[in-house]
Image (cartoon, rainbow, N blue to C red):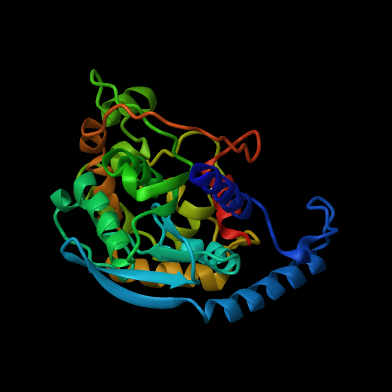
Length: 322
């Protein structure tokens, strides 16, 4: 009976995550909505979100030797949201509001190296043992034995590792963007990506300490965040070493998508201007080690296909909508 109830709750979580629950959208066809309607809806959503976000509480907890910033709202079973790169707790603001209104305690931290959480300088401080240890300690600090885990991008990688190392702490896991990645003992992940996509593939470019940071310094932080969150170029992300990072030079006049406001962009930029990108990049620099430390995992899968192309951008569209 307990497993059945957990699965029912998991279905509710997924429904909230992948559906636009705002009644304001009712009756509108995305292909026919006029600009004035879009502006009205967007402004109304921003107003409502601002009002509801006032109830989100922020605090700092000491976990695993670092100070971690945590945002939370609501009472009930804990839903723990883990963000990716380059994101923050803020990526889950809509889900925090929605889930807290449905009887859940929604919790979203800034991960190690991000936002208002401590960012150790050494690459060796970002192994999966450190990162999973942070999450386990956070769960302990919440005073619960288990959580519903929802994670995106790098957070999803950590989610799989957490399910492997400490499965007793997870009731159910909702994964966005990154499926379970079975390790290949014959080929290191970064080497495999380099063979497929070349040295300029973004994960390969992130490996050398200081190199990506120096390239990023050529651009405004707001430009970088805008490109990472809204880029639509087909094919694998390529950051060429020759000259400048042409993929990180968006048209500044290009309008933002409806799910990302200028206020949102300013928030992200303000945090990354303070911390830089090194903390997040250090996750990639430990990718080979992360996969080397994993092992076989038995899984119960429920796949929810958002559309025919479950791309990173489409996930962001869903994640940032209500």
